[in-house]
Image (cartoon, rainbow, N blue to C red; front, top):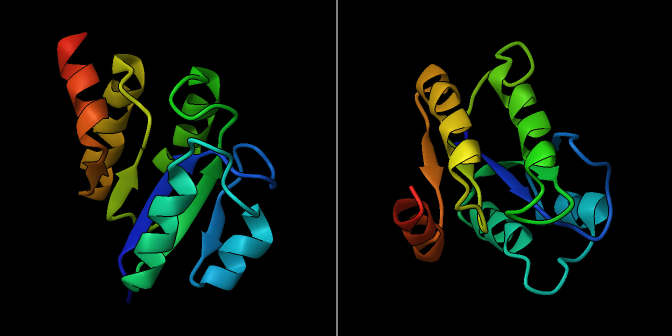
Length: 128
C-alpha cells in the first residue's frame, strides 16, 4: 500500500473543501487542472505522485490565507471514517499558527507528519 499525503492548495478547477483522491498525474490534472501563478500545492502533489505516493488534494481559495477553507478541509481529515490512512499533510504557503495548531491532533491521530516549506516554517516560528 502506497503512502498517502494530503495537500491543501490552490487549483484551476475542482470543488472547494472536497477530498480528491489521486493516484496518477492524469487524475490530478483532470480533477484540478493547472496551478495558479505562485501556487505550490499542485507542484508538490505532482512530485509526490512521481515518487509513487497517493494524493488527497483539497482545493483552497488562497494558499496560506483563507483560514476557513483550511479549517473546513481539516475537519474532513480529522474524521478517520473518511480518511483511514494519512502519512503526511502538506501545507505550502501556510505559516499561520491557528492552522498549524489544528493539525497537531490530526497528525497524532494518524501518526503522520506535516510537510511545509522553509519559508513557512520560519514565518510560523517568527510570529509565534
